Amino acid sequence: MKLITKALEERFEKIGDQSQTTNPIIVAKFFNPCGSATWYATEYDKENKICFGYVTGMAFDEWGTFSIEELESIKLPLGLGIERDIHFKETRFKEIIREQDLER
Image: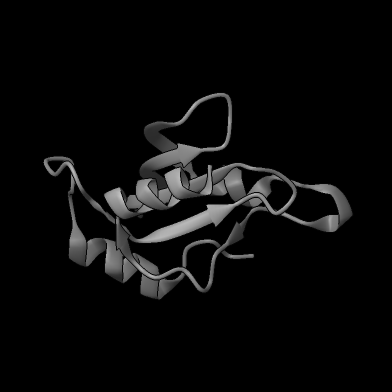
């Protein structure tokens, strides 16, 4: 699956740098359909194909960068790969955290 579409590239470009906000807009969500890892992207560097965002479901949750090319290259069981949540609607970070707290 192509994780970054032209429409997403344009949206990331329109929103721009969110590093100075404590409650950024989550533009895209990527997930491992065979595990618990989820990547929430707030920014995208089109030239280097690197996102900045919040990663959860691994050893610990953290903000950082992740490579779209690396995510697209991951091979999972049954021929699956990392997916983009095509039903995800942009939302603020604090809403994502609130939803995760409710699920626990």
